[in-house]
Structures are given as C-alpha cells and as structure tokens.
Figure 1 (cartoon, rainbow, N blue to C red):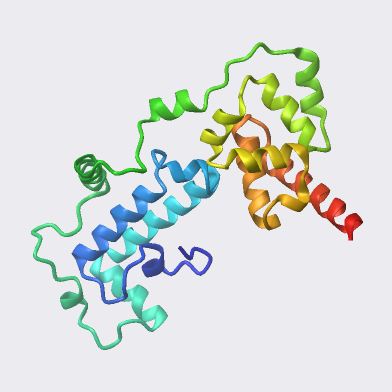
Figure 2: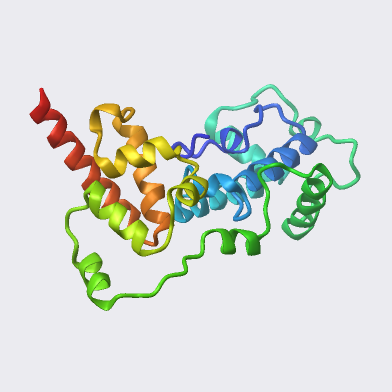
Length: 230
C-alpha cells in the first residue's frame, strides 16, 4: 500500500473508476488489514505505523465517499476527467456509503461470517504476548542502561523473561532456526539485513524492549562483523 503520496485510490486499493460500493468494500478490506485484531501487526508493522495507515484509510474514505469532495480531489489530481461523478458513484445499494459506525458494525459481521484466518480477539492477543517472570532490579537496570544489543544479551533477556524458543517463534512468526542464529550471532547464516532487522525488531518487541533501538544496534553489529570477515 502506498502512503507517502497519499493517493486515496491506492490507499484503499481500488481503481479510480470505482463505484460507491467498491469504495466501501475497499475501505472495509483495508481497515481490517490494519486493525488491532490483525496478526499482521505483530509480524510486519509497529502499532504507530498501523495507526498512521488507519488514519490515512479513514481520510481516503472520507473524501472518496463524498461525491463532491471526490470530484474536487479528482480534479486536483487530473483523475477521471471524462467520467460523470454521479455515474461514478452509482451503486445498487440504497446506502452505498454507511457512516463509520455502521461500517465498523458491518465489518465485524462480515469477518465473523467468514471466520477470517487473520483475526483474533484482543484478549487472546493480550494473553499470547504477556510475560510472566520474577523481576530482578539489577538486571532490569542493566537492560535499561544497555547501549549495545548482542545476540547473547538478547538470549539472556529472553531466558530471564521465561520465553522459550518455541514460544518466541510463535510470538514473532520467526523460525526457531533464525532465532538461534540471531542469538548465536551466526551472521553468515542469516538472510539479508532487511529481513534480519525485521526479525530482531519483532524479537525485541515481544520482550517489551525498545524495538527500534535494539534492531538498529544489532544491525550495526552485524554490518561491522560482516565487514571484518571480508
């Protein structure tokens, strides 16, 4: 999904000739993909990133669902010059553009009926990612003051927080093999840095660490060690 250019049609992943019904379906589909109940949140994007996209989705729907605002938007971008805006918004539905509240209700009903494989209740998500361990003030201070995040240090934190390899793999959706490679710093066996960064980011997030800081530090270390090996 393209967000930088704020192309509302691309945000909802619909054609510029989309009817009102297609716009509504695109809105529901996009909103569900980035909702708090989507497992993609835990494997691809941070909560802030998802919130940003959700805001763009709402903004896109607000503009495109209003014939007059859509006409102004299209004119400003040189889109659909030869298409009648009223015809473009025609739909067989009596109410092709429900309110956000109605849309949310419809969205819940749709995915309840479909038993969408990527949906889960917030309670299950909370339990799945909860950490149960006995806090050690000295080690907590060491974690808080850490400036370098090595594989062995991450492993030490994982074990301290009572998360075994199997559970970490389930939480992060990263294979047990790659988790071990990360902790052992088997850099030559890891995939491209862009993937490693994503793996470490999710690893840190699941352990309630600063994922951006940890991932950046680990990637810096990986690049240094890789250069030394050449």
